[in-house]
Image 1 (cartoon, rainbow, N blue to C red):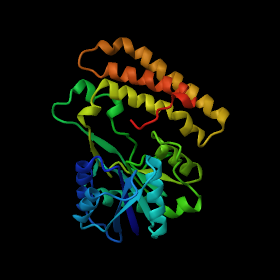
Image 2: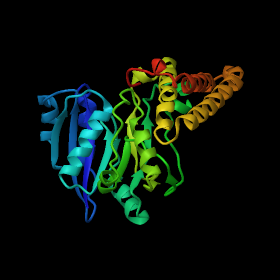
Image 3: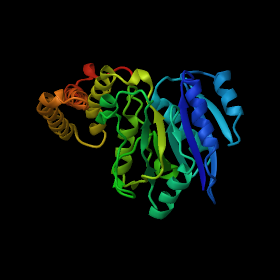
Length: 302
């Protein structure tokens, strides 16, 4: 089994990229698996010397390629094209500001082999600094996705996933390049699932992401929730009719808003994340409804 692990970078986070790929370099080998790393430098015509120097320190076979069009879906499609052109059986993604556990490859391949699935997804766990305020770090928006081990799921995120290249190419699947502000991975895997692709959850295949200080604020959480809401319609629209998408988003928006408004009075409880959760629910819900109009969708990733 030939596996291509893709890491996208803009070159702006050289230290986190270095931490990420060093963790990849320390992955435990798996019998019958040949692992190669591709670093996609996004937004440049040629990878810069910093990214090349990071790659040069690795033992894992590594290729550095550029994607001049700035935006996450462009970089993901560049990785997909690379994996298909070089005959890799599977393509995997993790983020450049995260690091896989040493047994990540072992666990995610074991889930693939045991389930016979077309894709396997796993959790990305947040890592907070010791001085992170508990009332904020316990907010739902920071928490990792949880699913039962080996459960079938209908979507995955590109922060921790592996999938069969042949399934994607045979169905003509690509990441939607209109999703420059985020959400292209969820929309892609919803279509992947709709085409009959089986996605299985591997709770033991863990990737860890440090939560940076600039992301530890109420403002960031609310903006993140808004972005998730405003991309909701476009994501739902990828696998449903326009009429059905409107109904789904109106329902989800109302549900989030109602939960936020009901729990807001309880946000005064000392030491709890209630205020953050309530505000995020309201932002998420309103975003779901207003996101049906292009003018309210965010122009950048949050």
